[in-house]
Each structure stands twice: as structure tokens, then as C-alpha cells.
Image (cartoon, rainbow, N blue to C red):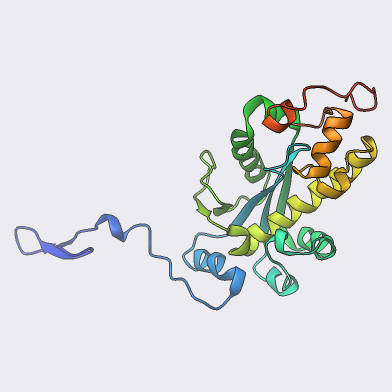
Length: 244
């Protein structure tokens, strides 16, 4: 019998048979709308407001993991026409968008997970935990959450992982800018705390300059000691300025 088809019970009265495919309601996607398409479809289905979650620093070997959530107002996209995946934007554009996103968002939250905690629980668990914390910090509470890349168990509202979400949903793109700018600023400050490592340039990622600095100066308290390339340097920085 087809989904939703009616059948008769004894006595002639029709009853409606609901198949698995009838629920939840099918979301209609429309091409117009750019980054707002997915959010708009969810809102039309009564599942809003929609929050996006993204992170910065997952692949770095030094510095924190920064996770951000963002709940955009319905009309915010007009003022955020230049919004895109933070990795596709220049640093200047990200810095310009950062205060605008915070001003226009219904709610936003930024969570910082330091290197020592990443070493303690692992990067994937840290990422999941950061996303949970970021969603928990939103007020008002979202009706639906879009996460970038993978499913996040433990979020208390319906959620959906979106592959390449920061290029597909405005709320995730906004969260990616919040996370990226916050972390970049922290790494610039770290460059002053630990001169010679080049943190302001490579932001803690694995570049030849960063590798050479670790081999020459040793590993700082801001390095992720559980990373193989960090462990292989073989020593901790001896100067008190680098000891953390």
C-alpha cells in the first residue's frame, strides 16, 4: 500500500495508514536564497529558529579549538550579503563581518577548548563537547541546529550534519566567522607571549616554519602534546618564557 493510503476497517469506515516516510514532514528545498536556502526550508516547516555551529583550529598542533554557535535573525542576511565560508574570506572581510554578525544575531556563543583539554579527551571528543557547550549557551533556544560536517549527539533539539555546511547555510557560515576571528586573535596574542614561533602567521598549523621553531625552541604549554609531530620534537622549551 502506498504511503499514507487509506484502508477500510470492518463496517466501512476509512482509517488513515501512516507509513514511516510520512513523518517528519518533507522539507521543500528551493534554489533561490543562496546560503539561506536550507534555513528557510526548515523555518517554513515550523522547525525554526535555526542555529549553526562550526569550529576553528581542529587541525592545528598548537593553540585552542574554538567552537561557535550562531542564531541569525530572519532579516540578518540582507546586511550579511558578503557572508561565506570563513576560509574563503580574506582576513579583512572576516574582521568586518565579525562585529556585524554579533550585532545582528539573535544569539551567539563562543567556546574555547585549550590545548591541555584536547590532549586529555582527544580532538574529536573536544569538538563534540565544544559544539554541545556552544548550543547550550544560546538564548533563545533554537528549534533546530545545523552542524558542520558530522553529527553531534547530545544536543537537546533536533539537529542535522551538513557536509560543507559553512558554504551551504548562513548560520553555519556566521558561526565559522565567529570561531575563526576569535581564534586568529588569540594566536596573534600568543605570538607576543611566545616570540619566535610565528604563531601570528601560521596560527599554530603545521607549516615548515612552525616545525623548525619547535625543533629550535622546544614545545610550549600551548602545543598539543598528543600530536605526533609535537611529540617527535622530543623536548619542552627550557626558557621560562616558554614553559607556560
